[in-house]
Image 1: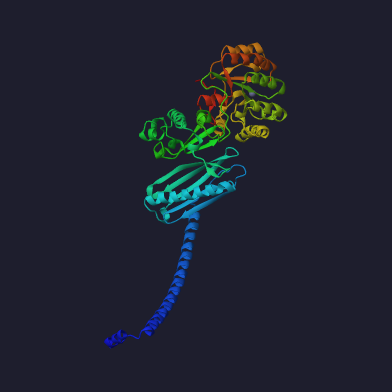
Image 2 (image 1 turned 90 degrees about the vertical axis):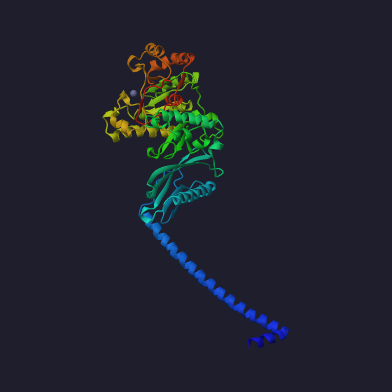
Length: 490
Ligand code: ZN
């Protein structure tokens, strides 16, 4: 039978056979395509169902994650930028959450892109190590803080808490970014600084850490030496605030991980000569750090009749001073405050009503300081960076609660006692040396008169008259809240 059919085919019926054959294959193709369509539809439904189920499962895991308090975000946002957003990823192996600020239309895309890149790199990092499951999965959370440096630049810092039980890892990583918010682009350390930067910043950071009792014993290691040598990559995790560059080191970067993360504040005066971009509108110091300098300090003012004379005299030699003001005088002496500020003088806190802070309750003490800060802020938009306690009375409670350093003195004119210009002159000119803090009161006629003679003489002797903060900065002494400083010798 097979043979017959074969023979018939061979004999052929020409075109008719071909047509029939092609008709048949069309039929088959039609059937096949219908089958394919059905298959595709079925597959799509199955895929969609799978996605939905997967999504629900993921959502449950995610919500479960949130309920487990995987994500404890905290952030500080500067004025006008309280808005933020977050991205997260939750899996059996990990729960990752990153919170980032919303800045402006130009910059938000870049910030989000970087947040996504961080998320991706965290996933990758976690996958490289042992997988966790559910209970012991890795949890990474990134919170941020942001500082508006100028109309153009912001410094953004992510503090990443890495927790990975499979690796017994629990530490903090810093990821710092600087953005040009007028273009929305990130600005790297290579764009901000020139080639002199690595040597300048490395020199300062290593000297600070070697002088710090907490770290000194760890500064001889290969890890420290390698990762603090003058290489820009060692000092590119940075942020700015006013006249400070902060260098961030994550746990394990320069010291063993158990020492943890740390930040080193570098005065911009130390690196400004290598700056190509002025991120904070910083003005370079108007003093020469290699020449002698002293800090004249005046308490209990301002008082127009006498303070204005002292400011005149300072201005005549291009000098500055630090005024420890009484808060309740500020409102009536706005003009003096503004003028002093414009001359580069500095204001410190001398309490609201010149009361002995050491005998007050903590709340009362803080109120005395805060009211003065608020009054000063309302006039020049700055708070007091320093405090001088009335009667030099500092209690342990004050030291604990302080958010500024306390400033004493190394030369005491006793002008409040003598009220005598000749005596003040003798106390200063016979005693003063490089790095001294000199205490006076800008509310006495004798003091203002003495300054008219003494200030030009000190300038002629080669002393630069600077503020307390400038003197500390020039000597590379960081000002720590609660600490007492009485001079800054070389
Ligand atoms: Zn006083």
